[in-house]
Amino acid sequence: MEIESEKCPKCQSLYCYQDGMLWICPECFYEWSIDSLQQEIENNHSFVDINGTPLENGDDVIVVKDLKIGKETIKSGTKAKNIRLLEEPVNGHDISCKIPKHGQLYLKCSVVKKA
Image 1 (cartoon, rainbow, N blue to C red):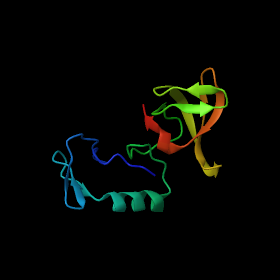
Image 2: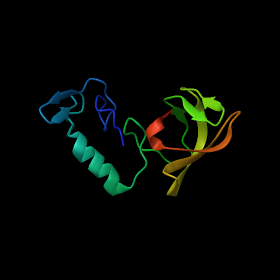
Image 3: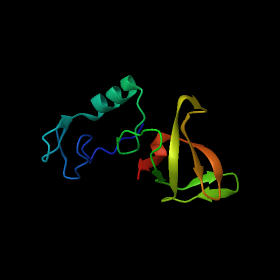
Image 4: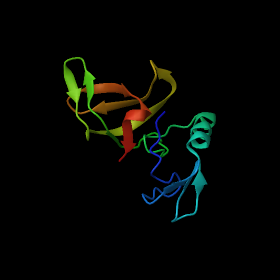
């Protein structure tokens, strides 16, 4: 899972900086390492978007990169409303949602951000 290390996982501040192996947030003073954050996410079995923000059932998400689905392409910036998180992933996809003009789809948390 990719995590955008420049954002603070606690307060979402963009002003974080790296000091050796740690990332530090000057706004909330939270310190973390990418390895510990990834391990915490995997241990909690929680659903997080590309920025590390927790996702819940009913959230709206935005696709962060173009996705080719057959002959169609879902463009970056497309919004999916009212997602449903899957306890048992389907072929590695852990989100079920409806996207206008594309219908019901499964997505991965690693290609969306919370709206």
